[in-house]
Image (cartoon, rainbow, N blue to C red; front, side, top):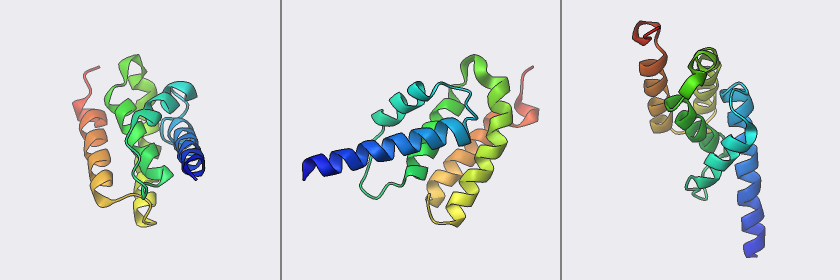
Length: 114
């Protein structure tokens, strides 16, 4: 029985990593890096793949390194995806708020130092 839950968790991590890497981060970071970070996050039973994907992507958006220009474009789609998932009940308001506030603060054109 433990193996069943372990495989479900692994499956959720893989699904969330794929969503984060492709949909939210626009393939800016390698999938393996995204999956590695996702696997380190706490995974409550009720956590959806979208919740884990959003949390994972948030870390990369907050720590862009030299990928900031690429993430500047990706964050627009990511913010819309997070809003859609919230409307569908897949992510909670608190996560949406944290995601939106962080990306707004970091990626707003008036806050860019280029």
